[in-house]
Length: 53
Image (cartoon, rainbow, N blue to C red; front, side, top):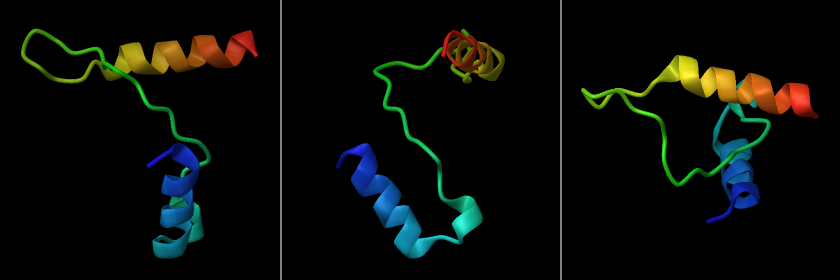
């Protein structure tokens, strides 16, 4: 399944405000030593991406 198919699936089954604008597949997510996602790091990466555009 690719991003377009997944968004189409969401449009068919979710309320319009819940449908994601875009989907990005990643090989790996940043995690702490305990195994929790490092959300601050992910947000920082997204900010960098938006500033670069």
